[in-house]
Every structure is written in C-alpha cells, then in structure tokens.
Image (cartoon, rainbow, N blue to C red; front, side):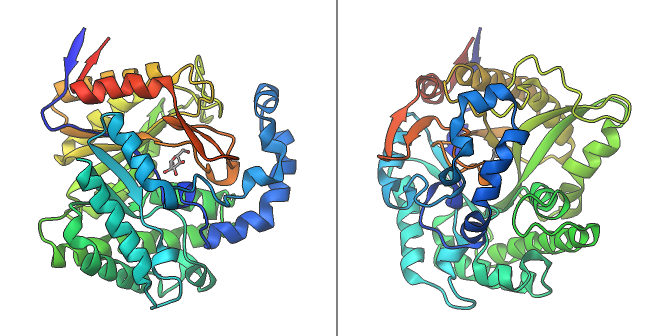
Length: 406
Ligand code: BGC
C-alpha cells in the first residue's frame, strides 16, 4: 500500500536544549548534582531485571549528570547537516532560558546570536524551525525565586518572551510557548520526582494557573510584534480507554487546550502513552510490545487522540512521537505505524500538517539520565561520535518521498 502525504507536510525530529546542548547551568544541572547518587541507587528497585541487565549504566552516577550531553551547543551544524541528509524539512528545538537570561533582567547577546545562527542555519538547509520557548529547564535565579510558583513568574517569563520576540522574532514563524505543562506539574509538584520536588495539590494549582497565564502572555506578546507568527503549545496526549476515560481524557489532555481558547494558532501533540482503565486501576495495558523503558507501544492511540482533536478546527503538528530502543529493533516499524495512523486521521479530515520524531539524537532523559536511547542517531557519549541508526534511513525515505509504503 502506498500512502501519499499532503503537499508541504513537515517532516523532522525534535530536541530540547537541556537534553542535548551540554554545559547548561540551570535548575536541572544543580538538581542532578544533588540527586545523582540517590537515583543510581534507586535503579535497583525501579526497573525490571531485564532492563537492569540490558542497561547497567543506570547504576552509574554519571548517567544522571547531564554534563556535556550531546555537545549539541557546539555541534549543531553537524547535527543539522545530518537531519538534512535524512530528508527533514523541519526541526523542533528549544531555547535555553538560563543561557539567554543568566541573571534576572540581564540578557546575553552572545546566546541570542547563537540561537539566531541556529535558526538561519536551519533556513539555509531548507528546514522550517519550530521553536519551543520553554522545555522544562529554568534559570537558577528563577528557580530560587520560587520557579513557576512565584507570583512574579508570569511577569518574568513575559519579559523573557518580549526579548525573544524583539531579537529573534523576525526569523521564526512557528513558536511553541511551553512543552507539556501538565507533565511538568505532575512530575515536579505531584509525584515530586523532578526539581523542585515539592509535592502538594495547592502548589499544583498555583503552578497550573501560572503556566496557563504564561502561555497566554507569551501568545499576546509574540502576536503584538509579529501578527503573522503561528503560536501554539506542545501538549502531552494520552489515549485513555475504559469507563473513566472521559474524565481522565478531559483532565489530562483537554483542560489546558480548552481554556487556551483563541490563543492557539495550532496544536502541538506529543503522544507516548495509552492508558487502559479497568475498575479503578489505571495503566492496565496489554503491553504486547514495550520500549526499553517498558512503555507500551500503541501507535493506534495516536489516531484516537487526533480524531478527538478535530473539533478544535486547528492545524495539528505531531511535535513528539518516539520510543527508547537502543538496539533499533522496533523503531522503524513504530514510526511507520504512527504515520499510518496519522494518514487514517487525515482521511477523516483531521488537519495534521507535520511529524517530528522524538528525538534526532540520543539524549539526557531527565531523571532517568542517558541510558534510554530515543535517537535517530546513536551517540557515543565518550567521543561524541554520531552514528545514524538504520531506522533513521527508513524514516528518511518517507520524508524524502512524502510517501509511506507499507
Ligand atoms: C518530553 C521530552 C522527553 C520525552 C520522552 C516528552 O514528554 O517532552 O523531553 O524526553 O517525552 O520521555
């Protein structure tokens, strides 16, 4: 079967600053130093024996310290050349707030110049930039102030966005204000497994309100300078199945989107999870196929997620979809299945306009560190050598031909 994608469909991969750049000094880099030892010792109880055997790096302290990561801050040209050779015509990445505003109110022109060069570097290679303003990591001064809980948070974020709109705005069409606000709240303030590890419902609500206002503020600021800009946000979407799926769906996938109302020019969908609910138990999945992280591979869920988004009548970009698969045994089929279900959604009239595989490179997977390997390219963290995985070439064929053959 041959499936043609709409003309102008965007094909690419995504990264985020803290996960790939290396050398960042922010709330995460500090937290990593304080928690690496604990995380390495907790691995024994956290992961199943097959994972422990396959990924002994999870017991090493260094696994949990981002340090030089993929050194993408210095190697971006090489990485963008690789993406181009893989037929990508778009690329999603994020700006590192701690580099651009290392001290409150003081902006670093060298960092702005750096990102400006990256954006024009994408243009020169025929790739459309999708720029995320904030992908989880925060400057230390902002975290010290109380982070997203602070009463000043939205104001500070607004000043940052204002600076970006003035300095980089002329180069960017597609902006994502925030990455997965819900996931951030859950991990940082509900489960308390990410910095600042402050668990409380009250804090969750305060952070929710601030993130929501931050999105609105950023939207308004960018539009005031650049009315033609397309501003959206990347939302984690879970496909829920079972009797409680309605409320779960609304709570996890919909509230932020619905409340954003008119302040969204497009919807960014990050899809990783299926969640079958049986009785009052969540995550009762069949798990026929799982990734290295033990996450169920359920590409069809993307179809259901997309179908439910149709009612918003907005363009949709899949801003993340991917899996940890160090041996590259499942990646090519997984990508193809996701694309097949996107084509099914297109056939039902859902306006999907692009797909960004997560991720271009193996990278620093937050509190899990380096052992989960999501990349189209494998990284040797000792030498920084990049090796393109064979699934990346299969995806490249689809990108280049704008066509999926299955
Ligand atoms: C995040 C990425 C992360 C990926 C895989 C998404 O929730 O945006 O930063 O690496 O999932 O866990």
